[in-house]
Amino acid sequence: MQKRHTDRQQYFNEQSESTRKYVLPYIFSRHCGLDPQSLEQEILKMLNLIQYQNDGKRKLRVLEIGCGEGGNLLPFLEIGCECWGVELSEYNYKNAVSFYAENPLNEDLHLLNKNIYDVSPADLSGTFDIIFLRDVIEHIPNQERLLQHLKQFLAPQGVLFIAFPPWRMPFGGHQQVSRSRWVSRFPYIHLLPKSVLKIFGVSDFDIGFMSDLSKTGLSISRFEKILKAKNCKILRKTHFFINPNYEIKFGLKPRELYRIFQIPHLQDFYTSAVYYLVNSEK
Image (tube, rainbow, N blue to C red):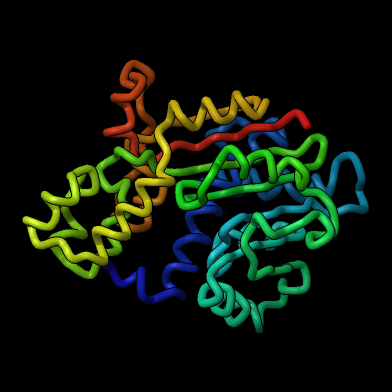
């Protein structure tokens, strides 16, 4: 376990920085017609003109599922969006309320401490231009049901941004959060049978955590099958050999996975993250 996993303010700040630098350009390169490699300053300049192109009086509405402490939402608030976050954990929800208590942008922030499956359109006061799940969908059970459920919250021209680490990638079991130093640094350990993990002395808690995640963890091919089954059109996708999150965490520059290495099933073992931008037919 690293310091960021216990220092939630640090985690909040890291999420904000990474989203500001990578997620905003990724989403708005489609909305604004910008090249995907545009600098974030250019993105922000363009966004000042959006508010909103088809209705100058309405703010862009953004919903994050599994918002945690709300770090990912801060960059959207900074560019004038109306932001909503749904968070299951009461602990994370209370942290978010505390972190934003003195923030002058909090009048455009709305947080719900609920299970997303218990949320209705009435709870969110309308539909959204952007719904995003960043490193969250792999924790939510029944992703087929989830995507169908989210359709009711999506505006007609809205988009879904979804990012996740494939289950079979080196740390797809999220073992990095383990309090055991050697377990937290052991790649692919989550793919070993429970009996083998016990032989190596892995705690019951860690085994249980990784086992639970194995039930919801996603492969790239399975995720795309779900999208197809739910009539979701892929507008853009990117496979990363080095996750953009790793820049702030480890000082590693993000690297996309060359297409030649995007081999079905095999790619899951060395793709550290995938980004998807999709829209949906009702």
